[in-house]
Image (cartoon, rainbow, N blue to C red):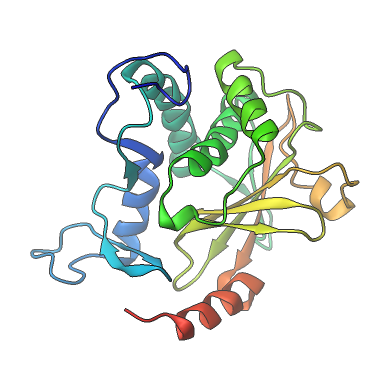
Length: 242
């Protein structure tokens, strides 16, 4: 079978993670011990889809037969860097604790990680990412960026990052939105990642948290309960049927 990334005919691995498992485990430590029918406080969480019943997922979000071993390891380097940077780094907070800063980050690795999550979400055919549907030209560009390891500057597929705090802030999934620009919006545990895919100008508010080469990573911290996403999630839960 052909690997989705390198396009070579190779044996494909049984479990390719779409979201690195440590993001999921971090969420599990916070909110999901001993949940459902998992005994003895084992780490576990659930994924939800309007098209299927809820499912326990103890080792993250993964799918079979999309990547060869070499390409899985290539993406694994990006996954490991993102997990270490976003889950284990020491943050500098402002007095109001509304902004976090990591003084030194590897722009290339972090941006390639986010681009790879978007690409993986498109090819994986997982119900959690059913809104991710890229045009062929964009899918080709993303794959080429990952293969060549050349993410471009901050103006190519601009990326913005928030962190949400509070009850039920840890989520996984993706949505597509058209305003204030066309973008995909990813839930990675406490983090919310925006990947802009159109050519509209960027508003000043977003420029403050734009991922930029040779600069600190700036993350705005928000209360989940007062967010637009919380309201939308509440409405979706009301419509959900197990």
